Each structure stands twice: as structure tokens, then as C-alpha cells.
Length: 229
Figure 1 (cartoon, rainbow, N blue to C red):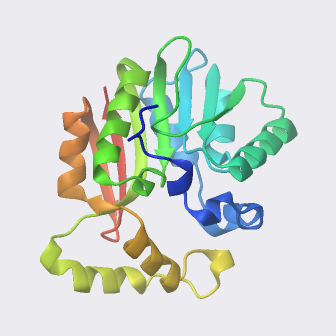
Figure 2 (cartoon, rainbow, N blue to C red):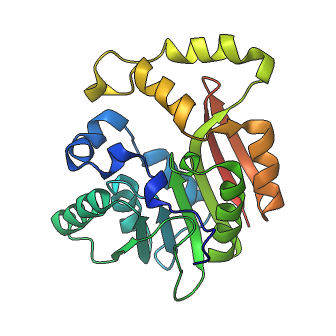
């Protein structure tokens, strides 16, 4: 890579590199992949499809989509996350899953173009310049007509509303960090990570080659997108 290229491991969030944190991540995240699997299957993912899970975390989505497609490539920069994915793959006997050490900016896709790319709550680790480069690289991974299913923390309000909307978001925080994200953790995210506004992020998707088929926002801070290349 060029000397100016971002070090994704340094931007992964120290907690995501911590095996103890990763061990409790499934309970903390509380993520059910059923809706995302249903969306991709409804848009044509089938037993022949190649799916890339970028920022795969502990592999919850990877394991859920694997029975519905031909090959899943689970990509993550964190050694602790990849260890968790590997353990899940072995436990569940998922013979069609590959685990790759890489990130949005370093993953080098091999073989036929992907039919779908999935990513959840990982892109916000990158500043906007790098988000755009990452999305352009995702478009390059996909075949023409391929799908991007993306979740992230995206602020769906105007800057003048920030005080009120962030306060509302904070009221949904939990008290026990094992059960979800506390107000202190949300505040740390705001200060140190790179979530952006919907009115910046949607044009970024379009500029990098995607047509937004569906978008949904929840609590002013969470965006879900289904896009076609």
C-alpha cells in the first residue's frame, strides 16, 4: 500500500481487538440477522451466490447467510474477531465459509465478482474521505447488478437539531454494558468515531456507483440500506 494509506487496524477500535470484549459481543450487540438474510434472498441471493461479509465481527451474519449461498467470505481486521468467526465456523460445520484478514481498504477479492456484500456497524470507523474510497472498493468487488446491504450509525437530522436528537438517542442507552451500549459508550462513539449525516452518506453511496433501493432510519442514528450496483 502507499505510505498515505490508512491503517485500518489502528482504526478498528481497541475494544474490538480485546478477546474479553469480543467474548461478550453477541449478547451486547443483540443482533438478529434474519431480516438481512431475508432481504438478500428476496433480491436473488441463492445457492450459487458469493457473499462478502465486510467487518464480519464474530460471524453472526456469516453463519446465518451460509446455508443460503454458495460461498461466504468473512472479512475482519481484528485477530480476536477472526478467532471467534473461526470457532463459529468449526462449531456449525460451515464448509462454504472462508475467513480473511483484511478491511474495507485492504480486502483483495479473488475469484468471480461477489453477488452481494454485507456490512454492519463497521464503516463508521473510517473518516468520510476513507468511507468514500471504501464504498468505491465495495462497488469494485460486486458484479454489475450486485447488492450491498449496509447498516451503520448514520445521523438522520440537521446540525441545528444535534443537541436535542443526541439527547434523545442517549435516553435509549442501557445501564449494564453487557446488555448493550451505555451512555458513556455512545458519547465515546460521538467523540472518537466517524458516523456521518444521512444527507452526506446517501450521495456518497450514489457517487460511488450504487442505486439506493431501500433506506430506513431508526432513532435518528441508525441507517439501513439496500443498494444495487
